[in-house]
Image (cartoon, rainbow, N blue to C red; front, top):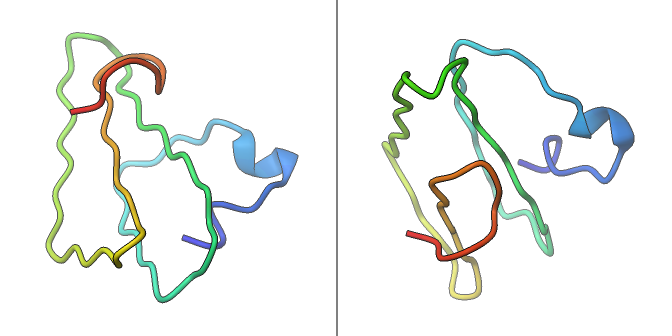
Length: 73
């Protein structure tokens, strides 16, 4: 997660991937947004957690829409 959440302009470019596995191991004070998007609005997107362990002050917000605004699910 720390490599994805760097505050660098190259990290904010769109990249096409066919799948991803994200690992987070005791990173501290990260404020990170990751956006996934399908090619078409007719396509479905699946998000699966095999193992999810959040610390006391960690938060995971999931938005269904084009932008991370509004009410999270």
